[in-house]
Amino acid sequence: MTKTEFPPAIKSRPVYGELAPRSGTAHVIVADGEGAAAVAALFDKAGDARAAMLAKTHILYAPGPTGVDQWPLIAALCAPQAQRTPSVSTLLFRLARVLQDTHMGAQFYLSGTEGLMGQAQRDIMATGFPFADIQTEHRGSTLRRVQCVHCKGMTENVATDPFKCSHCGLHLFVRDHYSRRLAAFQGVNIDAEDPGQIPAAVERFK
Amino acid sequence: MSGGAKIPVRVAEVVTVNALIKRFRFVARDGSELPAFSGGAHVVVEMDDAGTRRLNPYSLMSDPSDRSGYEISVRRDDQGRGGSLFLHNNVTAGMEMVLSHPMNLFPLDNRARKHLMIAGGIGITPFLAQIKQLVRFGGSFELHYAARNPALAAYADALKAAHGGKVNLYFDDEGQQIPLADLLSRQPLGTHLYVCGPKGMLNWVRQTATACGWPEHAVHFEEFLAPQPGKAFDVELTVTGKTIHVTETQSLLEAMEAAGVDAPYLCRGGACGQCETRVLRCDGELLHRDLWLTDAEHAEGTKIMPCVSRFDGRALAIER
Image 1: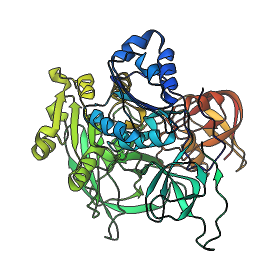
Image 2: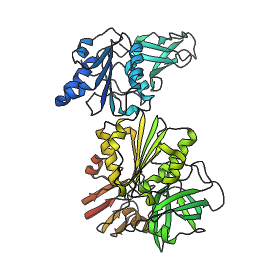
Image 3: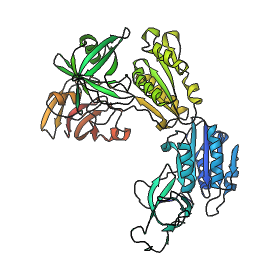
Image 4: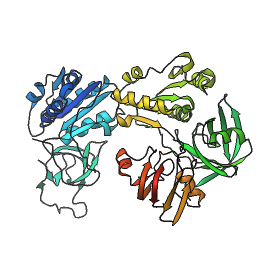
């Protein structure tokens, strides 16, 4: 499976690239689900520098939101530090600790779903590290993390549009409007003007 | 009007800082407050040097919260084109001059957890304003300042007295060098690097930062290029319908201004991008010297920055 191609969208929608090795004093890699294959491909691109890069690598991995678990791909790399976490939230907890000991000179690589990459980017960015220098590559599920603009509640793994807010129950239209600070797409009430007129939910994200 | 709105000022004070540097304080002629600026900003000082119009950018070094005046420090450049010599030799307290509005091409990135500053010689000036700003807003900083010797290290004593261990001094004459690679390897995540100084220092710091794995957007630098002299050339201006001659010591921008063409500009040092002009015909070689266009754009040859770049060849036409 290769990187995901998304249809054209408004400027606010994040775009993702392809992971490529950069010289650095440390390499912090965060991936979920099918992102494991992008991590393996990253080290294949390193060529002669592969062993030296691996020696300075820390990988955090979680299974994807649809249950895809490619941990064996990560384990086979034999990085000195690599952890499989059971969920995104436990992965982010470990990432916070890793960031405490990370100095300038480190490179960051994110791969997998938008929910995971967005939240890892948010946490790395919060240290002052420039978001534009964090590499990303989308792989796997396109399920979305959406914030209800009304009650501010986050709903993970949204598949349909519209969907029902998991906090306040409003029916929300899923926009491409994205917040880097919140690591979420914006969901707005679809029947605000005509209460009860709710279009049938369509599966847009898998 | 090109270059933006102007500020009519009076020279309030001229102070000799050391053998090479003088400080100038400007106040508004009508006594009003000057426009606000942020640390790292510069102004373009307009000079009438016996009929030759000189416009040089200088970093503001005074406290950004002090709007009663602006201060710049100018290093005398005996080999330069004459702007710094004019300021040193001809400008005295009480004189009326004209400044551009302040603009900032070297701002602090306030998302940074810490600001690591590298200054060389007169390159200390933007940091003086930035440090005052950081002290007010509570930002964390560390300054490494290299100068030829203590006598030429302008403001070093005041900085050391005010900020102690955050200020580190290095003197070339004593064989001291900034331990750059070591410094860069032990900065907390989220540190941003700033460098202002001579070109050799800028290149050294930027290359070392890249080698140490520092990301592009965490490395900030300020460089003003003075227009370099070169072969004289002619250029056709297609919009105004003029063909003008650029002398050996003039820049293309200055030649257009001398011919009465109101060409856009801001920094006049190849950095800001304001004077970017389309090249319509070029039979010869564009001598790109700016920091604005990408390498690809330089190779493409369809744009020129008239403030610093020149031409060598038979015929050039630009859209101005």
